Amino acid sequence: MKLPVAFLFAVLSNLWLTAMAQPTIYANQIGFDSKGPKIAVISTDKPLARKTIFNLINTTTGKAVFTGVLSGPASIDEWTPGKSYYQADFSAFQKTGKYRITATVEGKTSASFPFTIEENALAHLTISSIIHYYNKQRANTPQELEADSHMKLQGGGDKTVDMHGGWCDASGDVSKYFSHLAYANFMSPQQTPLVVWSMESASEAIPGLLEKWNIKDSLDNEALYGADYMMRALSKDDYFYMIIFSYFNKDPNARRIVGLRANSITTDEYQAAFREGGGMAIAALARISQWKKHGEYTSQQYLDAAKRAFAHLLVNNIKYDDDGRENVIDDYSALMAATELWIATNDNLYRDEARKRAQNLSKRMSPDGYFIANDANRPYWHASDAGLPVVALSRYLTKEKDEAMRTTALNTIKKALDYNLAVTNKVSNPFGYARQSFLYKGAVKAGFFIPHDNETGWWWQGENARLGSLATAALVGGKLVYNNNKPAKDSLAVFASQQVSWVLGCNPYSMCFMYGFGKNNVPYMHSNFGHGSERGGISNGITGKKENGDGSGIDYKTEDNGNEWRWTEQWIPHAAWFLQAITAMAEGK
Image 1 (cartoon, rainbow, N blue to C red):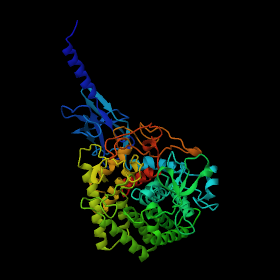
Image 2: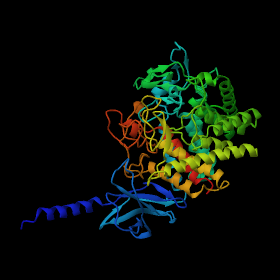
Image 3: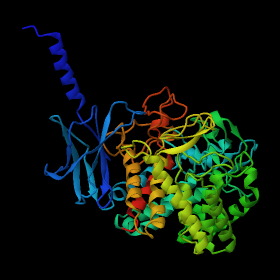
Image 4: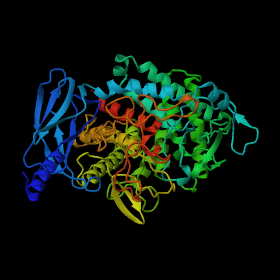
C-alpha cells in the first residue's frame, strides 16, 4: 500500500527525533571521593518533555542504589548549538563500591562508564601511577646521560657543564625545561621545579595515606631525584640554567643549554628569572632541605643552594626578565621562594621579601577579582598555572602570623576565588568548566579557553594543568578563607570536583586524559630515546576552536598535520597540578 508522503515524513521525523533524544552520559571515568561532590552530565538533542530520573547502578549486583531527578536543561550554544544538558547530582550517596549512571529517555537507556566511589578515591587510585609516569619520564637512558653530563651552552664555545638527570618535558619532547615561553613575558609556565615542589607538598600533606598505600618512599625518591637535577642546573654564578633543548633531533649530542624564543629559535639568554622557573626551584630546594633526606646532595647543600640562588635573583632578576620589568609571575614565584626559605630558616630577610611579594599580589587585584598581570590593564590568565597566585599566598599563610598581613592576604584569596566562581557561573555551564578573563584586541573578554592570538605568537594547547591548579586553589584557599582550615565551602568543592572530572572524562568528548585509565584515551605518542606516553601521564586536553583567535568554540583533534600535540601530548605540569588537586581533596580527612 502506498502511504502519503506527508505521513511518511511525519513518521520518519518522529523516529529521527526519538533517536536524537538518546541521552549521552558524561562522567568521571575513574572515581569520586565518598564524601565529596559527585556530578555527571547528560546531553540530549532536544529538551526533555518532562522531569527525568537517573539511577546509580551497582555494577556487581546490577541494582539501583540511588535515584535522582536530572536538573536542567542548560545549553552551551558556543560549543554545541541545539543540544540540551542536564546534571545528575549524586553527591549524597557515599557507599563504597563500583557504579555507573543510567538514564532512560523515550524508552532508550544509556549508561556511563563504571567508576569507583570510596574514601580518597582519586588519590588512592592514581598517585602510584603518577609516580610511575614521572619515573618513566626520567632522562636516564645511556644516550641522554652521556650527552647531558657534558652539556654545551649556546654561544659558550667548548665549555660544558653536567646537567644529567631531570625529566623529559612531554611525550613528544625530550627537552628539559625550568620554564619555556620566557620571551612572551606573561605566559611562562612552571615546569621541572613545579613538579618537585608538588611532590614535596603532596608528601607532606598526606604522609599517613601515602605510607598506608606503600608509595611514600617512591614519591620522596622521585622528588629527591628532581632536586638533584636542579642542583646541577645551578651555575657557579648562582643562576639556574633554564633549558636543555633537543631541537627535536634524534642525536643526543645536538642538545644545548639555551634560552628559547618562538619557532625553536635559541639564544644564550639561559639564566632563569624568578618567573622563568628560578623562583619555584628555590622554593623546591628550600622545602626539601627540611626533610633531612639526601639524594646526591645533603640537606644543607639543598638549603645553601636555595639561599645562593635567591640572593642572586634579588640583584639580577630584572636583568633576566626579557622585557626588563617584573610582573605577576615574578611576584608569585618569588613569594613561593621567599616563603619556603622563611619556613626553612626563620630568617627575617625572607620574611620581609615574602611580605613584599604578598602585598604586590594584593595590589594587583582588580575590582572584578582577577589579578592584573602587568602595571596597566592586562588580566592575569594562564594556560597551566592560573591557580598558583592563590596557592602561593596560601603557602605563605602557613608561616605568617601577623594579623594585618594575614587579613590582606586572606582578602586577596577570597576575591580571587569569588571571581573564579562568578566568571565560571556567569554563563550556562553544565560541565562547570573554569572560565577566565583576558585581554583580546584591546578589550577585556571572558571565555572558556585561552586566546590563541597571544604574546607567544603560536602557543596554545589544552589546559588540563590550569584546571588542576584552579581546583587546588579552590580547595587550599577555600579552607583558609571560609572554613578556618576545614574543607572548603560546597561551591568551591563542587568547582574543584568538576575541573578534575573534566580531565577524567566528564567533558563533551568523553575523553579520559589520564593515560591508562577510563574508557577513552588519546592515541599513544612516541618520542626519542624510547620515551613516550605513559600510564599516569595527563595529556593537554581540549581547546577553543582551532580557527578562533579569541579561543571561543571547542576543539579536540587526534590528527592535525603534526599539530595534534596541542590536544594529545602528555606534559609534566598537568600531572603535577592534578597531584596537588587530589592531595588537597584527601588532606585532612
